[in-house]
Length: 142
Image (cartoon, rainbow, N blue to C red; front, side, top):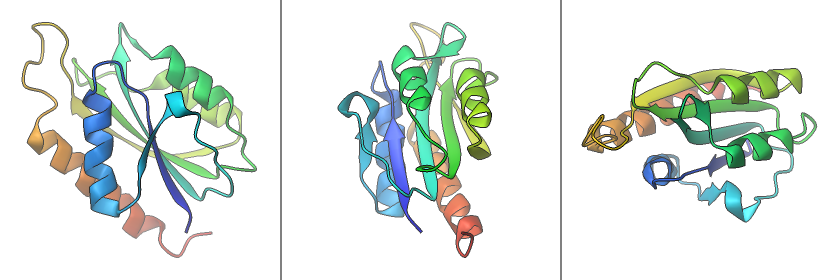
């Protein structure tokens, strides 16, 4: 199974989450800013945060560039201060492109004085466990 891990970050929180996932599933984490090339990807982990109610423009642009012939499934990993706002715009773009969204993991994020100390090591560990679980569930699928 061809698995990729891509993140978009403003505060480096998503990078830290992606690095934890990368270590757990033993693949490199790539920044959307580096315009990673994706071919024949069975599962793509997309890690990003919610800022002022939405995903970063860089994440949106990256998802707009995806093609269902190159990426089959996506698992979203989201950090958000409220711990309640998923990457709705990203999910809708993926679904409109015919790319299956298998699940979305959410962890608490922080902004200014809100959510201080998040994401923390527990959040990183939970994201890594989530990714490992998705990998186990996806093994054997084409």
